[in-house]
Length: 568
Image (cartoon, rainbow, N blue to C red; front, side, top):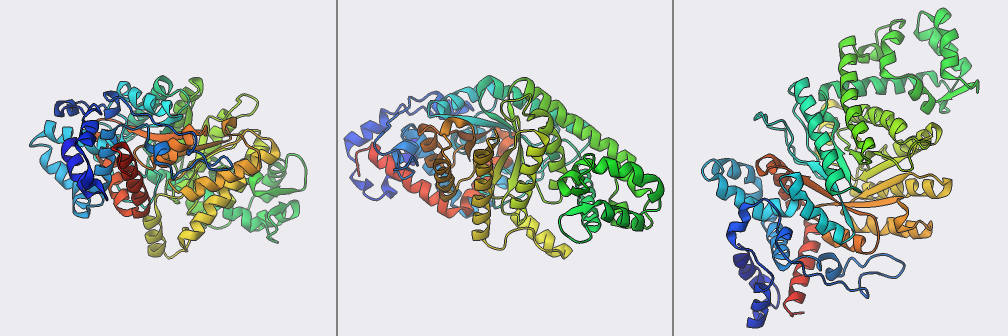
């Protein structure tokens, strides 16, 4: 496979027609494995001796920013077969007919020749984008990353229990946010997912102790339940706005008394107990952070029982059965978080669609209060995720920073651009509400950079131990946040900031950051080939759309190969 790819590719590169016999001998000395080796799911780096060529003179720009234009820094630790495989994968990803029909082709041919088909996938897309099939096979991948100063974010990429239930896979426009959705089958299925995530936590402990485990909340309960809970949370927000008569952002005691009396029939009996609960410090005002902390969805049934009219709040109120299922979901999440905390493994909770996100945030904030508590933990365990293509992202982060300060826990967040843009816009248009997505790409970039900078400044100026992760394939964002680090005198090893990219993508960023001493991470999915095919297909689809980033990588990979064979 690699000899064929080598001969085909070298002829395509500018100037490569002058490859000499000595250059071919150099390629042959790169320990290219025989075809039978590809029957193993272990990626190439297990059996190959790496060519590690580091250049201290060119790997850093002035001011401490890594030189991302240096192909040696980004790709010097890869063997020639790995470089050739990377080039082949990206080139195949640009062939639209193959990408569009990849799922059908796999489903058609695998039953006819499963060993051959899986061997081809393992030698190409799986080997490039995945860490292995099992925990033990992850170790060579993580060791390779660690050698370049990179840690792992592990995610068992199978999306359902092994009962032939296919996950719903949707094509998204994100550059660095795995966007899987789980079909809800049963509570039993959710219990199975708990074991999957717990196994992932233990895999992090065993093979990447300074790494993270990724978790998706829609795997732990019925997504329709998350949507119901999100509606309830949004209605409590609207209720606050109704009580804030003058719109100044706080509810005074008089405003509360007046509005409660207008909306509820039990003011005489309930007001005496509600006022001390909402304003325990007798400040005379309540803001939204206090309101949302004290008024939870589980409180709504008692509240709406006194409503004068059946309105949106009453309709959003969860039933007793739904409250029970919500508690079951919370229990599953708490079980995973407790295991992570006990083993000092950090959890990244993925962001999802806007109609699920308020409920997800509610669960994550409850976890952060427990497992990020400053009095008990020197560093945060639970990270929330914020999608900065959303118009309200910056305001939500500002509110949650305030919550963390008041609650006495470490703020911890992963920032991504977003994973559901097409679906969100289509839903908004179909239901007739304003799209929650920024109108332009430039607005999204601005929101991402400003929000990340705001969180970083919060730590620097208030002396907290909050942490953020820049999960981005956007070089400009990475460079800009490093400039802010330098400006704020935040050291790379302070733990304040992490950078993350997907395994097999933007190695020029990840490896350059790791070798320069920054906290660099790779998102490393693993699982059986047949189980991770939806993930691999999505990576190919995303690469076919993200032409600029892929073009930059192809150029640098070609530059590194030409350097290896002695042709400038």
